[in-house]
Image (cartoon, rainbow, N blue to C red; front, top):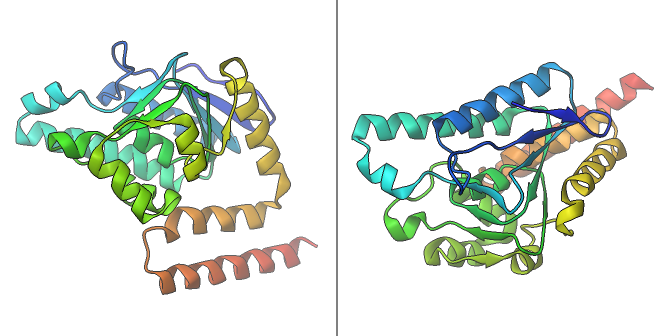
Length: 239
């Protein structure tokens, strides 16, 4: 998979899915997982995930899912879960650069990223609940943590398209940028964000951000305290 360094410590990872919708099939998810592992081994600090112009990514084709037997569907779900667990555990800071449609598993992919930049023509949709295929890739817990329970409930149950402007207002999208500036702005923002905090603090924040959303409030608070205590001790040792 093509990758290139843009800012110091930041790599680009293209999403190369199937067909004109850029579907996250088994091969696409495997390539993404391999690219993340390769970036980690190269010592990258962050990665930009992007699709072709006008398309970010779509989840599995519904017609394909309907044709799958139980064992095949289970294996497909397990492959996706492995990718999203890798994204949750990675030391990389992840940014999504979204242009055009972002549907189903593609939406889950965005929700697993730390920073989201989108063009005005980006649209977001999770239609699975309307067709009997609710997501198993973490979107059901990440979306409420990102935008709040009530907006997330409406988005998931209605399965409607959410415009880039609405997504930005809801807090799902960090910044709206012109299409011709999307990837360069994503790289600049992510590199600046990574450089702004000391490494121990950044690692602690990353652990809190990615883990506490699925924990009870009191457990999340305890995690935050432990992480920040560890960061303080690391800072003392580095002085």
